[in-house]
Length: 221
Length: 219
Image (cartoon, rainbow over all chains, first blue to last red):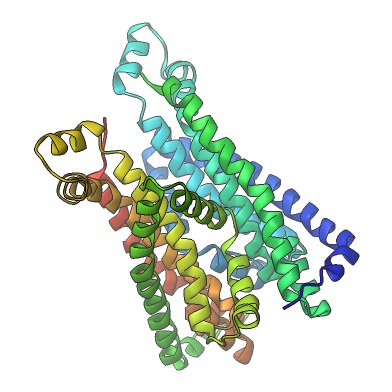
């Protein structure tokens, strides 16, 4: 078997464009999931009681359904319900953010829950209000503990953007598929794709492991 | 918007078959990936540089690749490079097993590593061999810590089986999307697909939460 990487080299601009879309989609998804998931997680912990069960239902439902299903549903079925047709990139952003925000919300809940109740009581004893106790005592400790988990979420997000190829978002996976089909060189194209994803993801997971070792002791109380 | 939900009932048989295949795929993958993970963990913890390096490379490679890419690569590379033609089902199974084995390998390694050294030292002091200490002292304690993590991996795996639909394995996602394109009842079929995954996945997610609460270690 001989390899011929020339189709990959000839189409480097095409692939680089895909890589740009992958990175943009990952960054935007991460941002939206952190905002949405943070809000949902905090509302679940501190919000009014009536809000709690719909939020738990949302979180557990997203954890129960494959991301592929959320993607396909947002792209094909959502326009029928709402009448709004989103281009693939934005449909993918909505679907991935909705899915990953549920995991972020779980991390926030676990982080907040891991701060011992004595900390809150001590804050109250110092005359702090509830909001002050949450902002100045609980969240700073909880955030440190959440950081490694957010790092894992980043690596999951980058991997999940590859699934957006199913709804034809022109990201790296989709571009590779197109190139593989056009050039009849699927092995070379997919081997390069493996290398590209590995080069992006390996430093992320390594950094997460390092952050975990460096920060683990800071979260103790 | 006119909806016709009867399409779901007309195709209930096909959806049930797809669901069976989804469950079968998840069960078979786990059946391969648990022994696979144990082998990877033991290789990693063995004294041999070669074995532990090989295991670490395998784990890092598959932890850092999108599963959908592994599935596509397996689909195109295995027949050409190995000269073997597998059915899409087997190809999907291989890709899933590679991915989940890597995660299980890390799970078992962390589980064994979390048992304090004093435990195996005490076992040696009682005159146990390395293998006896592993089997009778370390592994029973590690199993309890590994179980909730394995359960989480199972839930992820169950959802990830939907990705093999891209290489035309006739599991639930593929079946639902095939019926969608034949009948043009897009909203009905996709909602039915989501509902079936939800009905199967929701109790599993709850069970995993319970296992974590029940067996979770807090120090």
